[in-house]
Image 1 (cartoon, rainbow, N blue to C red):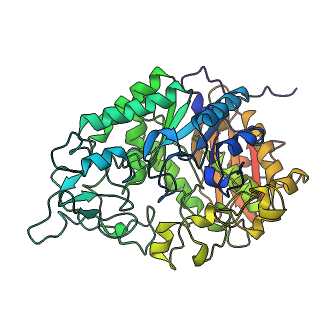
Image 2 (image 1 turned 90 degrees about the vertical axis):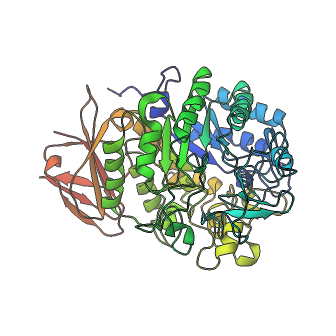
Length: 545
């Protein structure tokens, strides 16, 4: 008898726990007007494709009005669409079609800072006594003219910029052109909640909260101490930002009450939230921000967005979150718009499609809501963007040891023709030649492709509620192999074993003795007599005996 498909029910208050998120970086998804930059109508044109992947929530990176110095993460108007991406009418059309296909829409909210072009900042910097004078983080210099403390910017240099209008420094955690808002001012909090309500009224189903632990700062402006252990997760080892313990410039206790206000608003509209956490102890912050059912619904960190591929490391991240969390929920992401593509980062420069399939299956078997990044379903590798074509200011600053984020942001190759079918004009970043051979149209015709596997595996996963809601436990294995069990009351426990390497592995797993191998998951592997035999990038799923 065919097992009934487990459907994601939007009527359940925690329906998001059964869901899969798919991130679209709009500049690079699909260009509808030939200007070389992706846009909202382009996304709308590809919604059928997105729905076909078996995902439930479409997270769209910022499309708001912006000077684009950080490509939309510097917002000049929270309640309007940048003309580069279209119009509010285009967004409404996108929402309508997405909902007709059963897709939920999640938008990025970048609350900690604005663009320097924002009307709020223009007014704030105009004098020390205007109505918005205290809407941003301002400080007098030290007597010797230096900034008030040692805080650093993620993007390089001091976190303080001198402003000649007020003859004060303003704070910026990222680019100089991204001044930090003062969340200690209740008017700032209200303005953000009002802007969010604007989008919720338009039918938005959820928000992704960018840099969600950066909202508040220490009002005494105390110096950060040196880091006890250098942070190599949030930033690369060429960035001095990782040399500080960020005790005072972010992850402040005042953020928790604000997240509770945010959650109360979202609950009015039955909307969901996911927060991006980049802190010195990201797992602890994830647990704190998702605990209790009154803050974020989900959170993710950079802890699985690292270069290290190790089953012991992955296990430690999941186990530590489970140990610390009290009723909260994680979203495990292995790829996004800020890090090199997972196929290259974990699989190496010549990773086969088999690795991409294995990475997807492993990610979708962890406890939590998985978040997929555009192009990973096509097994795209990191693109090589030469310095002269680089757009990312972060990469330009730290070149050549750190090449920035453009390599994962190149346009999607929809076909193997000119510019990958992304645009009829000149693309804002070059389409990778390596991606053309893996273009979506090419993979549509290949039943063994990564695209076909993605569709099949997401459908197969829904047939097994243990993989959606079950508790998780791990087995001791060699570092190249991740072995786990998912347990759900009323269902048979599922064992899953993944070979993360390009070498065949034999796993001594007594728990597999007498287990019934599951069918239809699409990866090679076999078990007998308490041993699991896995070819390179193979996996095995079975019901526990």
